[in-house]
Amino acid sequence: MLNIISQIFVWINNAILKMTWLSNLIQAFVENVFGLSIKERLGGSVHFFIYDTIKIFILLSVLIFLISYIQSYFPPERTKKILGNIKGIKGNILGALLGTITPFCSCSSIPIFIGFNSAGLPLGITFSFLISSPLVDLASLLILMSFFGAKIAIAYVVVGLILAVIGGTIIDKLRLEKYVEGYVKEIENVDVEIALLTKQERISYSKEQVKDVFHKVWLYVLIGVGIGAAIHNWIPQSIIETVVGNNNPFAVLLATAVGIPMYADIFGTLPIAEALFGKGVGIGTVLSFMMAVTALSLPSIIMLSKVVKPKLLAIFVAIVSIGIIIIGYLFNAFSFMFV
Amino acid sequence: MIIKVLGSGCSSCKKLEENTRKAVEDLGIEATIEKVTDFKKIMAYGVMKTPALVVEEKVKIMGRVPSADEIKKYL
Image (cartoon, rainbow over all chains, first blue to last red):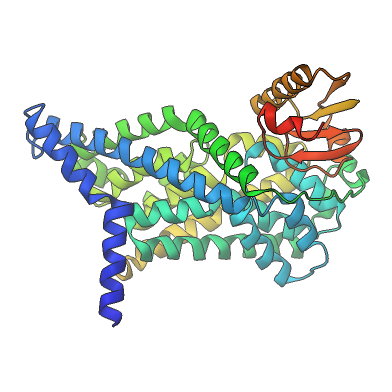
């Protein structure tokens, strides 16, 4: 019985998330229409480029639509109400979990921060939310499943949540409330009536989200796939191994350091991560890179700098960076469990 | 009718303003449309995700950009 279930799951994973049928289709296309062999460099890159671009765009559209629909039930205003009365580590855990299903864009980090603060939420709970929100979400879970398999995807979500909970708890324990900008504390809490959306409105919202995200990321996806294709077929294995391979004990540090200042969507970093992974780069190194890109971005740090003082901001960035580095090394050390 | 579009200048906020103007035009009603960009004022409505639409001081829509037709229902 279990065997049948796992076989069904593997089939779903291959057909829908990995789209092996698409890969085969594109292979036939490249070989017969362009007359290039997949096994050679040019043919291989063309195949990678076309297949990955189409796969990502399909996944992007379907996932963003489904997830926005779910997320329409969890506007940040509702999260604020839910978290309003909870203290202690339970709050951090709930905050981190809600961060994954609440739609997030860096433009809302200021109002969310101020809103949670004015509602009396402990600083650490707000940060648990702010750490998990960009780092872990339903879209990344499904996308990771598609590219790296279920085990890695679930492990990524779990450690992301743990990082959010621990990070928030540390910030609570360090009693950093005095580093919140003065004016933030003066803003009074207002609970707005959360309108119930009709099914039609949810669908229209989800469609808008797909168009919106597409608009924002299509170029990053193409660039990411381009870099991925280069790594896949053109950059010699030896260079990759030396720079970010498992022979380099600083691979995780490097991957994190490069990822932090980058501002790209997870959809854009995936083809790069996938290509590196295919070249034998450690799973931890690859995940650290993706986490660094998504969890910390220049726009959200700039936004946060408007509501918290430099010391708190620095501590936040440090906690998240160190957490990502530790996670990277752990995943590399335990990669035999996943790969 | 006093309509306020809450948002600090991102493209979806502009789109909401456009759609709102169209809705008002189509319905032919008398309304002033005010753009609120100061986030302290925005937060005073309890709104955490912009853009948002406020009609006669009541928040009708938040966190999304509805079409002009949808907006008409709220006017």
